[in-house]
Length: 189
Image (cartoon, rainbow, N blue to C red; front, side):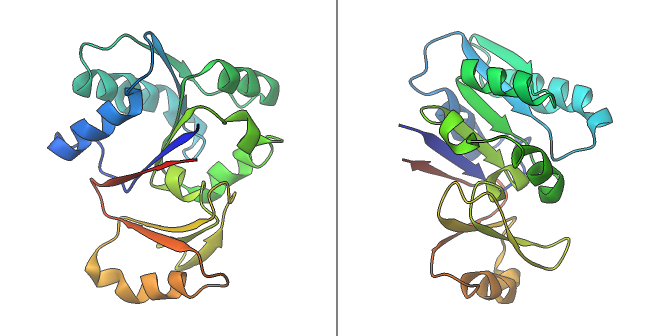
């Protein structure tokens, strides 16, 4: 079974919900848990800092007693495929969905490679997994990898109801997830 955990953003806040989120990531996994940190949605020069602060440091702040092994995702396609195969958790950080799509769409059978893993998507990382999402930066609905047959709206608030309606009515009638900051959904397939 593949477990997808889709987070709406704001993971660094020390809230009870974020503690549950990090606990859900490692739930039932034998230690050491290998976490592949994917920062393809950010400019490459930011990756080392994100890996330390938004990867290792944040995981250990919420899961201080867990034995975790962290691996930084590599842009070399063959190496990245091997990293996916050995990882327990694929942790896809947020940022620019277009950058993320550029990298992940090059990986043939990405949907098959991640089967049986825990796939964590933060904002852009969540949106890329769905079929459609709303981009507030670009002001329109975007088509993504479609690994999950859903529509996703991250950083959702009630003030964004019109934009949500645009996403809901776009092309196909699919389940639409509104994910506010600090909240998450678990989908097992």
